[in-house]
Length: 173
Image (cartoon, rainbow, N blue to C red):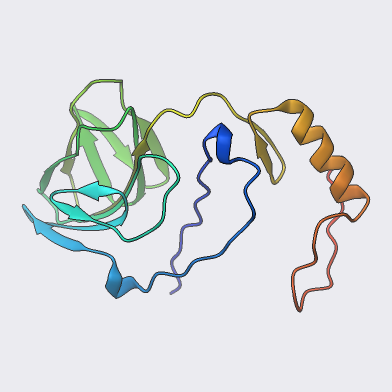
């Protein structure tokens, strides 16, 4: 079995036009904490007294939480925005059950306690509010005009090629 989650994080407006970069952080460099029948890996940000080495451009929280059936986990409360994505299993928050494949967005300034109804894997996503974004296909920006320019650039082949990959995927209709 292969298991993976691809995550895209928006940049603050002042960083949206920065040069692209790829940084790799081996799994063993990410802090892992055992709490109340749960194992939490701090992928980005700070939680439970641990700090991830992963570079961020704004306050960001990204956790992988493995909860044993019956476990209760209080989530960090210092994010302006916070959501959980239940990868598998089943958890409840305030009596509401969330099964695998569901994302739940927390109310602002509300503490969140996860309760695992069964063994569960949950991703916790949060951080500073960055303002509205427009998403169109693979393009994300705070500016609709910038999305339009990206569409034109893609169509005209002005994006750098991926080394070793000559495939071109046309814009969707």
